[in-house]
Length: 145
Image (tube, rainbow, N blue to C red; front, side, top):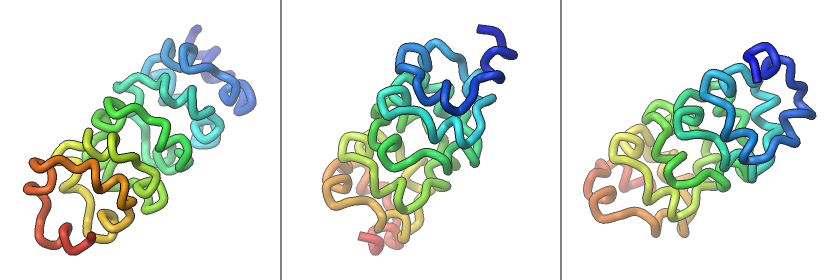
């Protein structure tokens, strides 16, 4: 597909893309999607985003991700988020992370979360923290539990 063709997608068309089709789109193509188009992606399709595409999501696109889409991200996709992106996730989005996803967070990503955002993680998700991640938390972050 050309860049013009990707830009010509309607929200409804984006909403029916499969994971394979989304995976065939580069980060530059996904960057052309509006926040509404990102929100329209099915949960399976979100799993098709390349790690580069996830890392390139802008603030509006990131904010548009529904909790079901967040929960559908593969651990490698979560690990591909920048620390800045992780810090901008809403409490609801953070609450949707699974234990496996939380276990894939880097120490830099965790450092981007203040105590309020740490508190948004579910009890099941917190169980996914590795010893190295826990030891990297600040005292203020630990108070978030």
